[in-house]
Image (cartoon, rainbow, N blue to C red; front, side, top):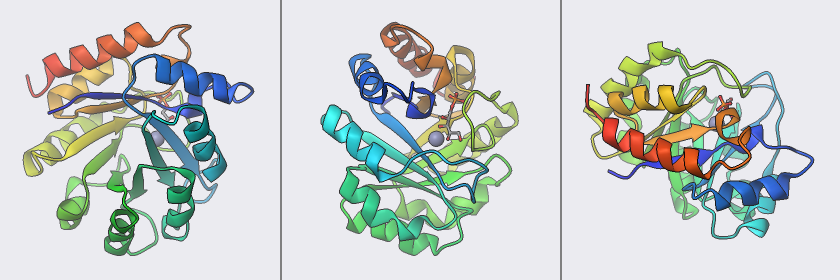
Length: 221
Ligand code: DX5
Ligand code: ZN
């Protein structure tokens, strides 16, 4: 199992996006997490494919995970692929054909991933486990950075890990040094952190420490 730390660009300084993309890349983080919000699936707007393209232009070698918090992600897959997305994450609660969406992401040459909101039970994704490479368990209600980690989601992570031992399981929302370890104990191996990392002048040591402590804590209860 590999352990990854992904800074969420939502917490960056939008007046200095290019600089903050480079800061995240220089930290030794494994990938950049890009949060796309449509003001319909979630009560907020963030950014679209242009910011994904900016991150590719500024740091071409820095892997791009694109989290689509959209009611109709299926209408935008080609646009995000063209902008440089490498993993595309769609919500199982989205209003589209999930089988077709995941297949389309793979046909575009990208890694398909499926996301569950905090109130969505683990079994909602069971029909799709053979069609995605990664699961993303939201540990806040999506829409905003800086919220508190919902520990009630931990049993769901454990249930998904038992059911899908080979899949990457990511957590997103309220992740910091303490909550990441709780998620790793439950079976998560990828950790998105926005406000926790971007508020640091140098996020490098925190990225390394998070990865090491999660690897040590993984499935150790
Ligand atoms: C929430 C987003 C998250 C967010 C996490 O809707 O999906 O990726 O940026 O922010 P923090 O780490 O500050 O909770
Ligand atoms: Zn996210």
